Length: 548
Image (tube, rainbow, N blue to C red; front, side, top):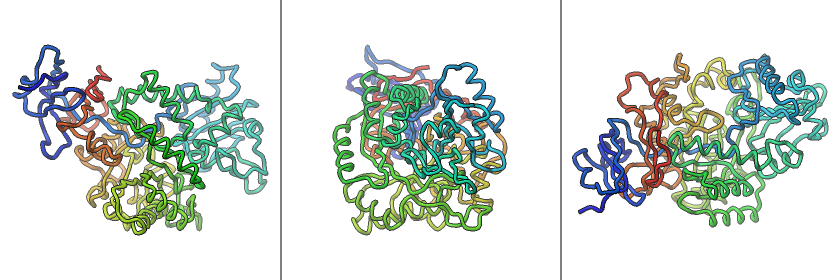
């Protein structure tokens, strides 16, 4: 006779993501693991006097969502002016002015989520644009993708940025070509400003956004959101060694309810001593709830400000193709050395030349070191040349993608991404279906706070390539079906992060990370119903962390 279960969920559509038993109706959980999966007539055998029983009433039960690229530490900051949805410079100014009216004693104006397309005439913003709204108070405004920063004149002065400054620890200074003066626009903020040195420099300069207490508040807000959305494992893709203290604090204070995989940022020029520190940190943090280990690298930046590396020039430019952060030969050597040392690599690559450079480097590493179960990832894969599609499966490289990014309101016609690459390259945009058909492994994620954290938004855009507000689909031939999208958010992301033996599917013996949704997504008549779906119940290791 079976020892009783701690939890039974029955009368459900159990989508197991396990080909051995694709569909079931009931699940029994015992000692934090999935003890049994089967038909509705079998669950009563697992009852005991203390078994909690949940009648799913036909709702969909899934493995817990694994968000393969989620900046929970960066998060969204309630102390900032919120610029998401501001479509013009005037609206940006109105929001900043409204915030200042409520915070007249603020020493800095800090804002987040400005959209490149809000700046008129397709140009990048300047300090003068901000000065009109902020006056002599220093201002720091971050783009929605956190890859660029926008400063006013007072901030340039406060940070000591002048005509002689080419780079800072937190960004590359853009100059007016006629005057040679800094424009107030900094590129490479994600590479520099989110690094250990960048954060320390901003903190030393008195920028409130970089203070550890502000960082911790952002982290806690994001972790609470992850629990609410049924994200049972978060992959935080870019951290310095300093940042690990924030996660340790969250564990000590009971704020980390999801599992966490934390990747460490490997800037160009990282020393052997630095790598040894990374390895020691990975050894200290290799537990059930928190694991440190993968390394994050960049090969290029982002398309909108023309800093991603393209094979051909940007639309409207005769020669400019963007740059890679490493010469290709140096990058290949770096990747091979890290691969030989046993590190798993997450490499940010958005442009087709950037992606090709990364695949070339992985190919070189395999030739030098031999094949191993590395599960390296190309992260974003926004503009992929058809000639490189098959290489993902051939090299066993994961395409870690964010379906929400390819919706028309973010990247489509009329937006800076689509205009920057030009219509003739739109067929290269986020080719999810093509990659899946080629045998590539897909891991899906939100890229919070670049886009919404809610997996329902990611699933919806994966199957429709429409904006959440509706309207026409952009490149609908690259949609995927619902089962494929769910796989990307569960088993695909589990495999991508070496978690597949214990997570990613509803399989006996695996840990009981489960999500019960408010409806059966496979039964909806209109895909927009996905957006109205919420998590009614979720468990991590059999412990209920969310109950609606």
